[in-house]
Length: 435
Image (tube, rainbow, N blue to C red):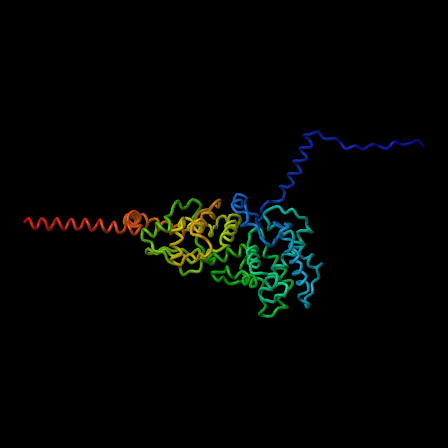
């Protein structure tokens, strides 16, 4: 039997054009999965907004979720999270669930969780599941410890006031979120209703307690409330109840100009601290402009920036927070405007200089595009402009600005009027004497 030569199999060499076609076909596979789905609620802040103040969108001490995972600045907190995971796994002896079961449970939810993130996540399945499990358990344990105040000696030494404050702010940043439904499912599996007494808090109640400082309107933790994540909850804290949310006026209804607080005061507008707890509840009636009291501190800009970013990405046609910032940007443009609001008890400002506070609203408005204002704000805008532009009020404003804005000018004006009156009286007496 003779030798049989093996058949040489060679891969056909493609010309440049054929290879290019194959490359484009591979790229087209990326288009098969949608970039945005109805489940999307967690976003990277758009570049044109983020570039104005990178630090305000970047966590300082802890990374939650996939967007900031892996940064060296969070290495210590990553180790701290594992302490909480260990404690969580040992917490309930009556309902023991081993780590393998938890990993399998998170894996089942992974496809739905991924859909909540609007940006591509460059993590494989195992890495993503690990992040979700560790971060979710850390948040649940943190909230529970804050509620019960059962801190260990190590925690009392570690959790300094500055750290706990910064941690709370980090958990409110838009890019630093987990979907709330994941937290709820893990919490309910770890602490099923059958094992709880009537006083056992829900995760929603724990969440409200942890972020209670920001719940100025005293929103109740209603079991039917839909929360996408903590940034979304913070926005709900600032809005009126859903049944009295103002109607939107439409994209073409925009505000062109509004007098400043100083100009309005000069025309006779009286500023008053409103009794409403809802920050957005501005009212104008019978010369009185009511603005709910608000506090400016070191975190005001950070929180508002993230709320505005959420509205731009998630609620582009319901920009209620942006409406408010837009009105305040018109009213406050100088230290004099700030002084008026502070004197009237509207603004509590212990952190910023007058010019810094005045620039706050202007900075927040940059690169944020309102989609039209609510009807109530448009009425406010029109009423204030009508009042200011009336001949009588505008004349008074001009008189105060040009002649009465300093004590010396007031004195000079009074003196000039007195001289004129004396001259008239003298002339009359002269005429009488001549007769």
